[in-house]
Length: 637
Picture: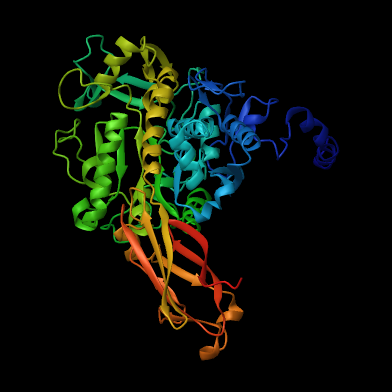
């Protein structure tokens, strides 16, 4: 058969040949919902593979059950199932809507909880809580789910929760990175970021060196290999564990330790450029820096995973734009795993260097409240407290010093948005207590707890393994997903609940302007003084000092509004607002502190009419909106 005949044969028959071998995926069917394929396909053009074997972890619930319990983790679809069910069941207090679209095109759903009969959510003080930004840090999403259920099931029976939903708005987003979370929960991949292709190792290739599940168990463990004669390894066996399981970094090691996989790009590193790599928690507009390698001087600060520009990712952009279009939010928590810690601004300086003292005092109050509720060992800023929570680097012995993060959510929350904003870290790698009293909660403490309390399920004993390129090796280590990054399922509700209760405690403290009295006093000659008194009955001011500085809020203010026909005509108008003398006739106040009562006064003159009705409006960006009616003068009988 000559070349012309071969070409004709391929043109005529190749569609039939390929139709039998290649299944065309329905573009509207996401791989996590596709029951007809064993592979999970990720969108985006990359130099490495974009498909992985599907795997269902026993710790995860993939289909909704009749009851929602927290002895197992839940997929994005299961969470969305409950959110949709609750929206149908509680229509008077729930709004469910799509607030954004992920990189791959999945919906990002959000819920507003408020009593619709008592006013719009935007007319009320508000809190915002979010999980799932880092794809593998799924405990945070479970805490949002737990809080949602807790609020809904206790509304109408718990007086405090009922009052909260009647008077405030709570915005809840359980999954801000559904692409990454679905990949994490439906495969062996340990991705942390969005799935957008990214050159993590700066070699000009995108996602070319991902992890491989070499033993096919659906879990990416570690590989350890003894150093050959003449080689200096990176690890030694930690002498604290008599069974020889724990590995410790050392400059004179006799082992090399890698994550499970191979060196796909031949650069001597293993799995350093897997799926994605952009960090949604480094993509905020406050104090953003270019990604690694993009500082042309080579002498400035860069931020790994920063993205092409601030808010380059649709997931982070949807958060920032929601916040900026909803400035009624005073407290927020956008959560991750693991430390554990109540984590807040600043991320590039010490707290005392850049924060208003009165704002810092509020943060410190919630630092302590958080630790009291959750039992976390740390609370404080990213730059100093987080970076130096241990005095020395356990690997090198060098003293630790403050270290910056850029484009970080808590910095956006305080410096740009002027709110109380935490980026709390849940779970602790099983290091429940300091077993060896060295002042550090580390892998040894996690291993001891796993042995004594978790039945050893969090650690895979090292087993002989023939590595495709390294030869004789061993495979084992901590379970990366349900011990290292998140807890075993029997620990889930404990961590989800206590974090949710801290968030709830902050929401309970939201500012709340309450009308005390509207009085009308006659001054004679058809002139009246109208006094409006109101009090902030919440535990937070209606604006932090930082919020006033950056003008994310407007002044608390009071207006007295009449029918426009009554105020037309200048000196001949039937109603004249003599005082305030400003053209907009608005009484501007300072922010209202907790427990503070403020009074606005108006002088009104009536001309040729006995009385007039007016609307009293109290307007506060974060303290709420109040409207009532008052009659000035003596109505004719």
